[in-house]
Length: 278
Image (cartoon, rainbow, N blue to C red):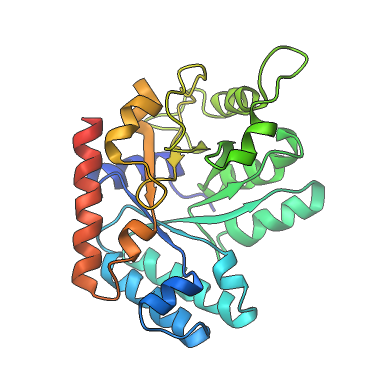
C-alpha cells in the first residue's frame, strides 16, 4: 500500500523542479478574468489549462477543494480528473481541504484524501489541529501507511488566527508552539525530510520566537497577491528556509489563460525562490 514517504518525494520534486507550489483556486472572479463562465464548464476549462500548462513543470499543485465543491458532484468530478492528470504529469498533489474532526469522522476524511483507492487520493492534505492535535491521529496513521503527508495549520497569515494560535497554555507555551512540537515528534529521524509539515504564513515577518525546525516541510502561503515576496522567506523562516514550500496562486494564475504566460510566471517565481533561499 505504501509509496515512498511524502517527505522524500517532496524533497526530490523541489530539487528537480524548483521549490514552488502553485495553487489551483478557481475563484468566480478569476474565471471571469479568463473569459470563462462561472459554471462547471468554465471550471473544467480553467483547471485543465492550468494542469496542462504546468503539470510537467511545478513540483506541487495545491487545489483548493472548496472551489470545486461549490459546484456539487460535477465540480468534485472535475477535481478528481485534475488530480489524476496532474499526477500523470509528475506533479505532487497537496489537497487544500483543511479537514479536522474527531474519531470515525476524521477517519472518513482521511480515507477520502489519503487512501490510495480513493479517486481524490493526494500526496498530502491540509488539516486543522484545533480540536486537539490528537484528533488528527486517524489521518496521521493513514498517511504513514500510504506514504502521504499532512500540512497542519500552525501559524496562519489570517489576522483572526492569532487569537487561537498565539494563545498561551497553562504550561507557558503557545498553542502554535505545541502544534510545532507535535510535528517535530512525528518527523523524528526522518531523512531527507519528514512527511508532516506545518502551514506558516509567508506574510508574518520575523518568527524567531517559534521553533520551526520540525524536520518537515513548511507550506508558506501568501506570496504574490497577498503581499509577500520570495525575498521575505529568509526573514520569516530563518535556518529552516530550505524546507519551505512557497505557495503562489493568483500571482501565477492571473497570467492565464495563455499557457506560455502561465509557465513564464511559474518559472519566474521558482527562480526568485531559488535565489532567496540559496
